[in-house]
Length: 428
Image (tube, rainbow, N blue to C red; front, side, top):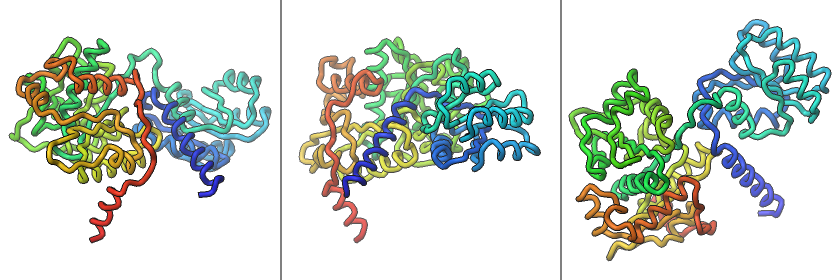
């Protein structure tokens, strides 16, 4: 790779990192209609990318090439949407005149955002005085677009929305649920923060066993009665596991099948996020429309894997899919669990991490006695032995996932021979 190409790729990567960082705290945009009228690809592209972001999932965005004159012509015979975004390269006086023509066609409730090419304070003041919601100076990023839409349409006085953290296993039996439950308990304990655990494995969920709970109601009542979901109803479904830890338990029965639409759990999650600052989503190892949608909409994703070839393959597939579908979010976090099983041939941490480009936030050793005793007694690891090294590792995971600590080591980029072997097997 030439130095120029390398620098260009590095710039793209840094830009993506900046976007992910800037969008970390942005809240989802409500169900609104947006139409953009762009004069240049430099503005149309970031708006298009913004429309593909998970925070804009409810919004309906349409992009037209052409600036304010195109918008004026378009709305001669069409109603105006909730938000119009227009780009103009015109000088300030002409820009103000053309906006006057557009204003005559806009409904009173329509908001207008102008993207211009003049960094002029007087122009900004005139536009705001004329009723424009925001004036942005090109160039802009997708984070700028989502940020300004959020600023306009999300009530700053509204209660803060809790952060959702989805835990998913690379394959069955890797201990994802156990890690999720213990991390949730650690968060509530360490930070004196309200935490809700939601068990999405309705048929075989283990959260009720791990927390020694047997609630009469839980996730099934919520998902099968979407018309009743609000904060009061959800609060009645939650089982109290600790002082600041609540559980939306799975029924763990097979008296019915659990087939759902892709958005079946969206309202439950949104309601739970208004109830607690931290929401831990314990997702089963299945691949359906609803499990994928729930995973993609989470604020943070944690993949738990064991150091084996099948687990590496599945983790690689998950990481690649998430990077492709969540380009404006940080990569998923990785936990390697059950490391050091006697007589088992394992992939080293370095060989596991290299093809993923992700440093594990924790490597948890195989300890059947600690985990077995905790599981059989319906207790968390920290309740069994607060000073155990594995408990300290769980506490560190809680710090990283809540932004109170950073991953200590950096993974070296590279391609592992392990993944090459996997590809050779596919070709045979």
